[in-house]
Length: 187
Image (tube, rainbow, N blue to C red; front, side, top):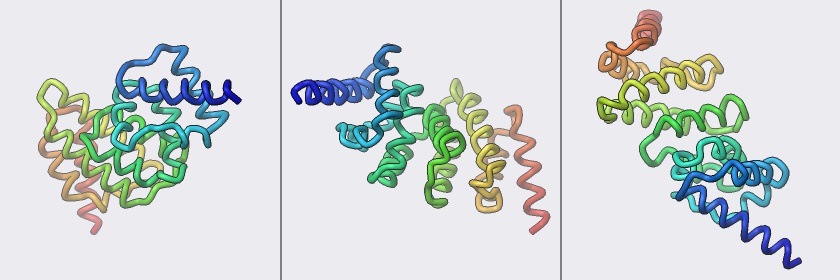
C-alpha cells in the first residue's frame, strides 16, 4: 500500500515538474506509459487547469500523450478552455491538431471555432521574428481541420480573409485566400 502511495506521489511530482521544466526522456516515458496504461490515474494527478498551457509549451511530446487523455476525461471542456485561454502558441496548435486528428478526441464545434479565431489573433499579434512560423503552422492546422471536415471555411470567411490579406507575403497564404474567395463566389 505504501508503495502505491509513493508511486502516485512520484507521478504527481513529475507531472508538476513538467509544467516548470523540460523533463528527461526517462521521465517522459514514465508519464507517457501511465497515460496509456492507467488513464484514470491521470485524472487524479494534480494538474491545475491553468497549468495545461505550461505543460504544452515545456514538454510538447509529453503533452501529445497526456492532453488527449485529459480532453476525454471528466474535466474535458474546462481543460480545452484552459488550453486556448492563453495565447495559442504553435505548440498548442500542434497538440490540438494531434488531439483532433490523430487521437480523434471528441469536442464541440464551438470550441474548434474559438481555437481558430484565437489562433488568427495570435498570428496577428506575433512579433515579426515569429510571425512566419505562427502563420505557416496555422495554415497547416486550418487546412487539416478542413480536410477532416472539422471546420468549414464558410464559418470563418471574414476572419480568414483579413488574415490572408495581412499575411499574403508568406508562402501558402495565397492558396487559402483563393479558396476563401471561391467560397464567397459560390454563396
